[in-house]
Image 1: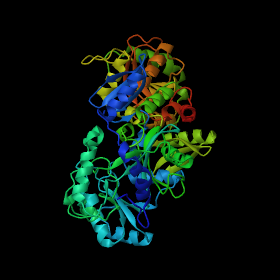
Image 2: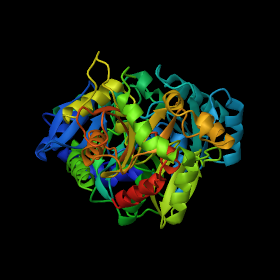
Image 3: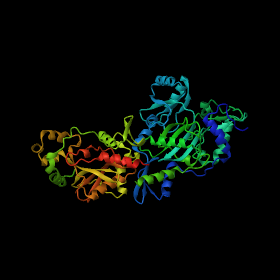
Length: 355
Length: 245
């Protein structure tokens, strides 16, 4: 049975229905994939630069013996000290976005020990909230669409559990108004959008007969020819499915699009990156560029947006500006054209070095 | 500090003694942040404060910012390199710039701090340790009481010495050395370069000691002796030049 729209589809469901499902047969089959830092170094070589390794994480780019840039772990010299400090906290990023009047969901940071304050804040907002660890850089520990105190308690525990051993002592929770929309990550370099992907959660289309486990296994099998996805396959167990209220034995009604994770997790949760660079409206592009520019001294980063529709920035918000973003999903999208973000970064490094 | 201090005593004799009476009173020196703000304001750059850090806005566009003393002319990469002696040394060596020989004392010379903004040195001071100065020129005989107090506790000479402007005394080979040192680090468009210099008129045997991306501009705006240099203005000009991305 063909997938069909729910009575009131979410922006993500609509995108899957209108954009992803029709391309199902065109799943990309990447054979060899390169890591983030290797992509950047290859781009440097293509621009006739030499790359010298100074320490384990530190590299310098030379063009005819002149230092033009460098890389410290995954971030390049296009990122100012101030920008890197801001990016360590979601709450700080939010304040900079607000200072530049870039739309971002209303929210605040709350100490992990102040759960009762969190409950009060949720009631004061009077709408569903998203709960996130302030210092997280991946999607870890995030819960969206929290409406009750019980859900908030669970979300709080999940965010606490996501705390890494290396996390700074000032670990806070960011609570913000839940904002429905398609999860879009735009990589901006200078004033230009170098690539954009929509991030879609791992989903199946029910047939009214096959179990969720069976459909998920078939989807994982289908992706095995894609080297990028094959290296990031989730293990779909009952525990994996619990947050969406399903088990492997559940059966989903015919034609229903069923996400298997609450948010798109492209790292380990089976989420898909779908290239939408050419689909973004001009005002959404502007929103992403404005998001980057709100952070002083930031010349390259991923800007995460939630957009109700790809046709217009109306109702769209910027959630995060992340100079640590991994560029591989732009180079190896599950559907659509690969975008050479690494080349855009190196071109910009050269451009800035010449001033 | 080398035992032989001929370079220093020669400098005191030639460049400090003749003008010591003009020693600046530094008790009420403005702060680094105040000097930067003044330079921003005179160029109609607006400052917005977010969580105790500054965002600089020109014509509605964010052109940079400052987190404590570090402006956006300093990449995160550069900050890390400058904070690590070994990494700094490796960057300097890769550009064939002279660095101190390990396990060997420095030759007789002067401690010079050059501030580089963009392509060039915009100010330089020599640090004269107070002890060496007092030994050679008993200040009680030359300075009034207010100057004496300033000499001994001036805000611009926290290292127990006075800063003497030498911007125009530095040989071009030394200013080039300072600029090359700054540019050996990726993503660094402004900062102080500390040099150890046997002679002001030659780069022979001069070495680069360190880079300071958090350097205060106050020393250059108000050296204890010599001309004031507008480093804050040069920093803001670089921010404006580099903002057109």
